Image (cartoon, rainbow, N blue to C red; front, side, top):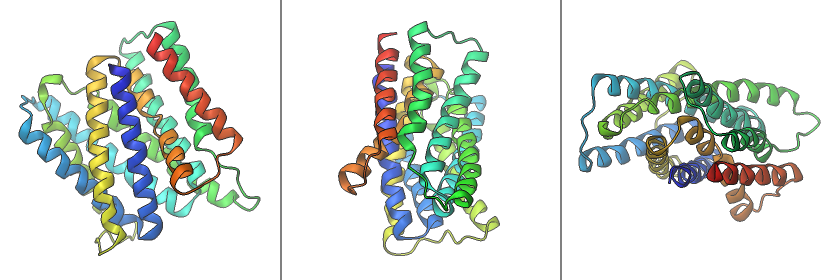
Length: 278
């Protein structure tokens, strides 16, 4: 069950990134990021109203910390897509999102089985390869910019997964609502600091609402997977989301899938099989 929930979270994140990425290409990065956070907040409000919970101060604190990570990850991911190559930003951020919570889980006492370890190890190059695109000869500058943004986005999303992984099952969705609200405020603050305008306008800016609602489903899937199993496994499998984004781009945007991406998908599939059998 934990494997299925984490894979569901990865698919939801991948679809969310696909919608947000298409919207950011047609509109402006900052409004799309803000409406995505708004959509996630609205979805979480509904969950918090219909699902009972008893969140402690510690649970809420973890939720607030996760919001800082989510806001940081969203800001640098979208900025990286805007000024660098998606094929650099996406794999770096996804690997970072997997490594940070997995390392935290192992250092705090989790001991996955050997086959699960093999799956987790296979996932990291799989995530990298499935997101990579052959670079043009003149792409060094944009690749360097994308690398920095990708690292920072990975740290942000890794912090998000690590923090939400500490929230107790009986806490309900109050801490997740705190995460989404802080994330939205973080995007607005970052936009102001970096000279962007987060004000949504009519058109593709509002596609972010759909991306945000899907992100809510992804967070719920991740949290349920964490409650059913290990944080390290939930984080690594959820971080397979670039595979879903690449497949969607191939199907609907007719983007070509390169050989390295095919190898990456094979490694991702191997990872899922190893974790499920372990």
